[in-house]
Amino acid sequence: MSFVEALINSLVGLCVAVLLTRFALPFWGYAPSIAESFEITALFFAAGFTRNWIICALFRRFGRNS
Image 1 (cartoon, rainbow, N blue to C red):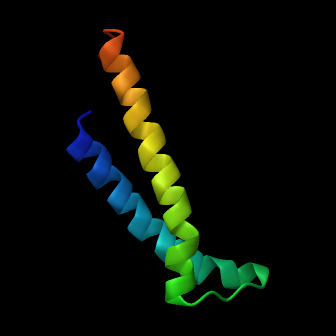
Image 2: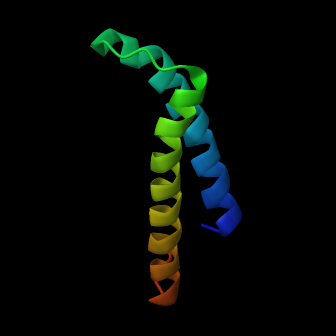
């Protein structure tokens, strides 16, 4: 998986997570604005993207492609 693939995958995940945060959290008594939803999800986006990129780099470095 390339950097671009990891980025696109994470961006799609970011959009889904912002929407889920915005519309699902009210079921548990939280009502974040769209800006708050983005802020909450931005941390998870950064962590997920970084994790994905590092794991892929490690697999490439040690010669495993699947």
